Image 1 (spheres, rainbow, N blue to C red):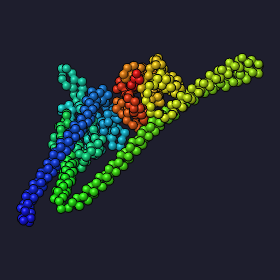
Image 2 (cartoon, rainbow, N blue to C red; image 1 turned 90 degrees about the horizontal axis):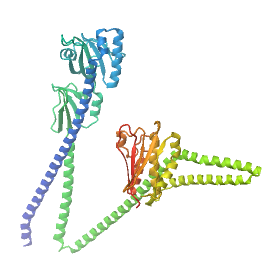
Image 3 (spheres, one colour; image 1 turned 180 degrees about the vertical axis):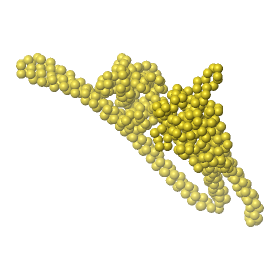
Image 4 (cartoon, helix red, strand yellow; image 1 turned 45 degrees about the vertical axis):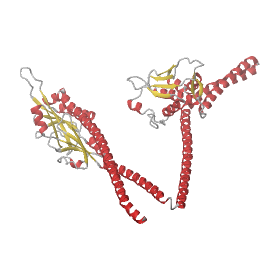
Length: 563
């Protein structure tokens, strides 16, 4: 009877297993197809964006070079050389074309007379100069005389380098009664696209430009140039667009392999998950079947499972302890980085502090010498006055060194009410010498003594020193340099530090708070980053206003009020 019951259960188990395998196959196939489709769509979108960017870059080059040919077609120096091709006139044209070629990134610019002979060229001083060469056989010459302007992509007969030739005719000033003036010659601008093609070669996708006949004239693969356009393969994504102002088509061809790999990886992950699920289900069914007969085995299994849980718990505990240790180490590193920035700032203001200390020291020395002379003369009351002055100078030195020592110490991390006026006094004292040496005017409002913000004292002083130092360094070489500080109470309180220097460029503004990026020769690129991080640590923020033409830089520090 048990054998008969087991034989009856076997077909149902086999059908159940086949159903599970079929469902798993469908899940895996669906996962592969959906992932591959999504990856293909993303690849196609990325390639479309890349293709449009390259079309715009190519169009920009063509527009700039066409403008060169059009402007030169009306140039009086060119027309004079064609009317009177003397050595002096041809030399003037060659020198002008040479300067213009450097300014416009053209490969070469040359002037042809009505017979197609080059009478002047930007490469006049090279061994491969075009001067004296006859280009009447070129289509760009005959078409320019016939239509006014022409375009031809060809291999150079002298340089043996491929390029695009843009030509425009030069004519006598037309007379109203006679219509168009007589053709005097043709100006030709040759453009080479080596920089574009090198940029294309750095990408994964293949890029090529085809002319109206389907011939490749530009390509990231030089071997394809002047060949028929390759037929796209089945494993390629192809995007193309017309180049405005030409009969060219730019095509970008990328491999679909990344989409296939993404689909396979997703399928493998899903398969692994299903395998784990199947193993778990198998263990569960196996435990259920053997529960009655193998109670001891189940007990051992539970013991082993508990041991595995304990091991995993210990591993997680170790991982959590390691993570906490890493977080503490990160906090230490962040504090050390802040301290390093502060010490770097101290290095820059050392000369100023020395100047501030030397003045009272010199006064003390003078008063002491004067006191010795007075003692010798018996004028004791005046000696007492000198001693009082010496004590006041010593107090001033002590105040300067106390401020310097206070700024150099590490922040204690305690956030609380801080008198804004006292923090500014420390920052102004530490940055005074360079400001006075540069003759920088400082517009500073009168800060009420009871105006307080929620911050950490040393950190706030460090932020203010960084902002003032940056403004002073930006004003180097600026006539009538000026720093303006304004304070707007509120929630939050806003401190604005502005200068009338050259200001920020767009590139500098976009990377202003990026670590280790700086425009200073000896800068660390951490001052603004650390200042922003410190401001945020006690609930504030630091940012800059966008660049404005002919205006200096403006930084805004927002601090929470202590009230």
